[in-house]
Length: 390
Image (cartoon, rainbow, N blue to C red; front, side, top):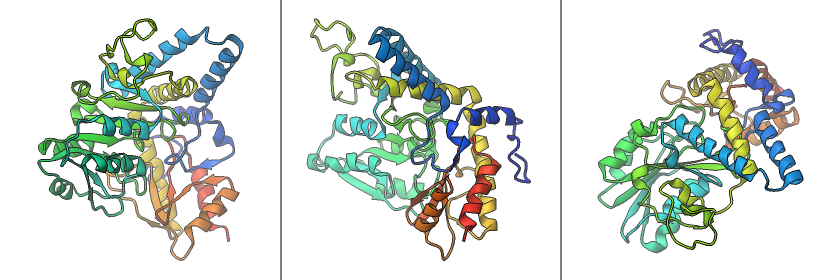
């Protein structure tokens, strides 16, 4: 995409790859979809993987279970490669809430400890920590403005009893993008660990958990990863495997997972120990298919494409009088654009767009558009036209 705001080509000349990506998104035939930060459509490969599982399960029962299980092993490896982790550090969980709750409830708290979070976190990264009050753990909130987190304020809120700093990689309201390495530096300087809510960036922004110093992250697959709901990911840095007391222990938590006659608590030496029982097989197989598709395109290329698409979107919105509230500076801009049209009701505008098969969200009194890398200029013009409809 050039500075004339054309979306016919990616900045690195990968227009054909994104055209193919679009063909793999069946929803694009009807909708101009700007709501990937809420619940995204599943990809065509995810649909096909789930349908194949359903057909096999209906016609053959669990005959193919070993094959499905091997695909989950491949999923762990794929996720690990995407974030420069080891597969043993990846657990397959239900969702972001599930992953964060495993950390919150499994950590060895002492009365008087505290957790520090930005004050505009999504509930999934708030309630699990607030729920620790009965164990004498204080939740400290750092003021933000439009999602913008000041690292000095974050540091000032920590003290010698801070055990965890929990923050979103990208703000769900405004799209403000934090630097995971900077968050980790603040946490580690105070002797605390970093828990990253990665749901609004994983798969569309590069992440090296080793280089950044991330201790834990949790993410759902039903947003930017284009997977189904109920299939998520948890990263636990290897050195912290013994830090968390495993919860929901079951047959899948132990090294002898398929020997049901051996009742001995020998936990797996990997994050799989946190998985417990039977997985959401169809959901995870669908998620695996979508992640494989994204990785073939390339996370760096997808990230750049989304920046280009949102740059064009902001340009066109500004031309019709919209006020952009998301920070669009180079290190901060993401796939989330928060905006309003002065004098017009955001909820009414959202309903009007929905009537024209243009989908976006309403968050914090403003409209929120979140296109993906397969979004094109035609989609953007459909949004502009819908917003301009009398």
